[in-house]
Length: 290
Image 1 (tube, rainbow, N blue to C red):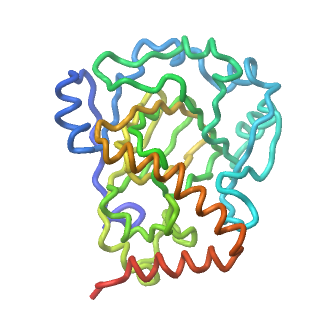
Image 2 (tube, rainbow, N blue to C red):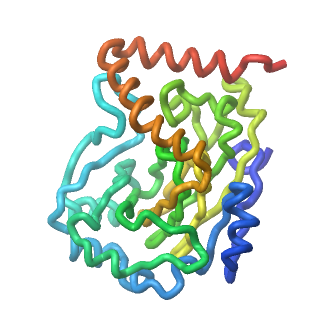
Image 3 (cartoon, rainbow, N blue to C red):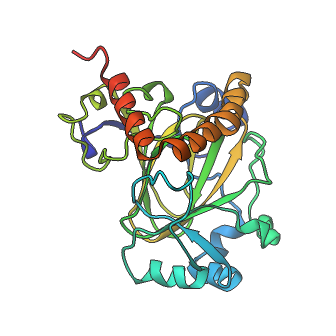
């Protein structure tokens, strides 16, 4: 065991990859990597800082999230509050805060920002219509989950620093994955896991990386990830479809069937549905443990 108690290996940092090297070493085996030159030459690298976002999007009202547990009365991904982007950036710069923005499509409002980045020729074709931004304050975290659409993600960090923990999809059972969901039991402290209380976590091996300005983390489809903001920070995620038909169909099922079913069951079953799923996740994770 090492940092944070988990058995982690550092995610390799590379630059100068060819298309063939990227496909053979990372896409096909679905291995994560930090690409140090993915964003090389982007106007965004020099332009995009807190002041720039404040200037171009300060008047936008943005949805905010924190680290509170799932509330059965709310839909998945329902924000806890809203505020003007300029006020939120003031908050980020003033010190630690749990409040985050995620899956924010600023480009819908300011499409010309798409001119500030482009994808290297050796990378898979990115879904340019789905660029998403993520903001977080020092000390905030994004709970452990995998992306529901099963896409590959290129996650480029701009201002500040964040820590990423990644786990292969094959460990989903031992991570206490919630049935009909894409995250694990929220009582698990990913910063300081209690292996006595959650013994299945001992079966898990993962990866870790610290991301600074201009670093791009490639997360293969289905890769579980936990993000910890070490300082006020924001980043851009670009998505690319997995070449596997099975993964594409799994992503489609997750979005159109699984998520919808869970929302209905939550409405009908309330807190007892949430508790039932937690118990189910524990039984499944700890089955066959000796």
